Amino acid sequence: MKALVVYGTRYGTSGEIAEEITRTLKEEGVETELLDSRGLKDWDVTPYDLVIVGSGIKIGKWTKGARKFLDKNKSALADRKVALFVSCGAANKEESRGEGQEKYLDDVAHKHLINDPVATGLFGSTFDPDSKQGFLYKQVMKSIKKDLEKQGIDVSKPIDCRDWDEIRAWTRALVD
Image 1: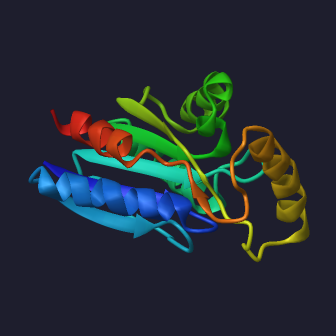
Image 2: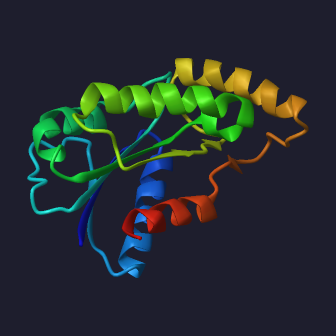
């Protein structure tokens, strides 16, 4: 089996997930290639049996590069096993996971793929109080910070809500 992992990231969170997916696939004996979708023009997906595409979510949207990759390869992906994943805050709390699944995975699959994906992964995000991002990001983070504080979480240091064991198990299930 040969796999391609393509990701879109803004702050590195989904890129780290893509790297772990790649590492896990290689441990399972799968020949795997990892690509950052940023600036990616054309890529031939026909040599791959499995194509995994993921993105970080910012203000409710996938990265532009990951969306473009899906659109440009829509026809070719119809003949392959495709899995989608996202890293987003909706995965951090049980009550928002259903909405995150629908909005960031099911709706994206419906819009950008011909066939249903073989799997979708809704993975947690990170929170870094010292992150140097734009104004809009800072405003969103203020709201998230208040929510985390209400939960009794120390927001003075970075928080990683990604479940690495879940990510590895999800990846292994793709090749079983």
